[in-house]
Length: 149
Image (cartoon, rainbow, N blue to C red):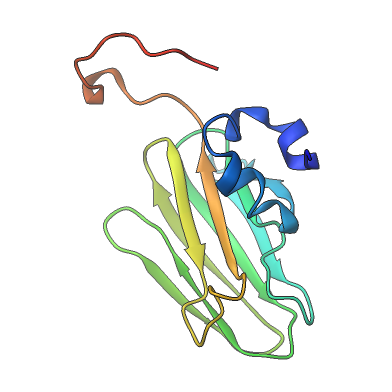
């Protein structure tokens, strides 16, 4: 079974079919957009009566700063524990609230986020920020060339 996200961005699914392609596709795929300030921007929401982020996969085309706006449209209180270099960011999301924060993700990879109150993550309120790009030359391991998808 393929998902719309898998068809749109197949490079996320090569080695991680069980994780990204199957687990997180229920909230959809979103792309961070670059603003005139050079900062990437994204919006993620929790729909009413559904324990999921929408979109549950946010794709950054390159590393850098991401201003993310979080909306809680649910009738329950949640929070957001977000990755950021140097220190994680935590935001309280009371019922029908919204908030913004800036994350710094300076390298390619998959960065998990979720709500660490109650059993939100265990019930499905998890997402990922996928930062595209290659590892800088000075950070690469000294090993033979690896196959690329």
